[in-house]
Amino acid sequence: MSKDKYYLGSLCKHGHDYLGTGKTLRYTKWRSCIQCGKERHTNYVDEHQKEILQYRKRYYKNNKEKMCKRQKINSKEYYRNNKEIISMYQMFYRAQHKAHMQEQQKTYKERTINSTQEPRKPEELKNQRRN
Image (cartoon, rainbow, N blue to C red; front, side):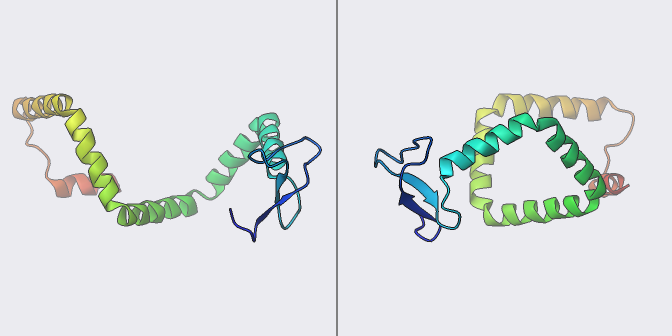
C-alpha cells in the first residue's frame, strides 16, 4: 500500500471497513473510498455495456492501424521480457499434450506425402501471409 496514493480515514457512508481496522481505505488525492469507487465503476459498466461496446468497436475501426502496431510492439516486448516463463509454459504444454501433438504431426506428414503438390517452402508461406 502506497502512502502517497492511499490513507486510512473515517468509515465511508456505506461502511466499507478495511481489513477490520474500523477505518476506510481512501484515495489521498480525492479522499474518496476505494471500495465505493470500484462499486460505482462496476455499476456503470453493467448499465452502459452496449454503449461501451459500440465505442470500442468504433474506436478500433477508426484506429485499427495504430492499435495493430501497438499490439505488435507490446507482444514483442512481452516476449522479450518473459522468455523464460514462455519457454517453461511451452515445455509444460508439450509434456501435457504429447500424444495429441504426435497425432497431429503424423496426420500432417501423411497429408503431405499423399498430396500431389510438394510441401511449401517457408519463404512461400511468409510471402503468402504478407499478401
